[in-house]
Length: 133
Image (cartoon, rainbow, N blue to C red; front, side):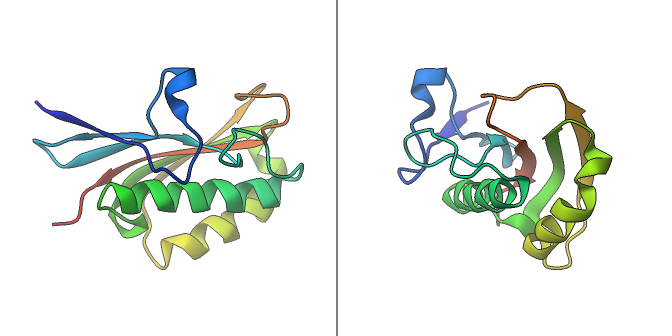
């Protein structure tokens, strides 16, 4: 197996955290995307509300997928981690997420958590996808 690292230049440098934004198993064409959050290129939270952070995390996810030669249409499974109860935010975040899906319906897991990467981080979205062939 050969592993290719994916680290878009427009996103924050994950090396300080010991991570890549994604890895690709080149044998299977599977893309494993690290949790994407609402951070700017300096690894700072961009906004303090869940809607804005969701949009920023989705845009980062899109950037990573495109850099990996994939897309939202190629997502196999997506995990959405939300600070607190998922049910408290589902009505606000799912319309934003499904807008990016554009009709695609991957396996989806929503998980409420007590904490994320920083105290200001409210949502983190990770995915498993296939590269485009």
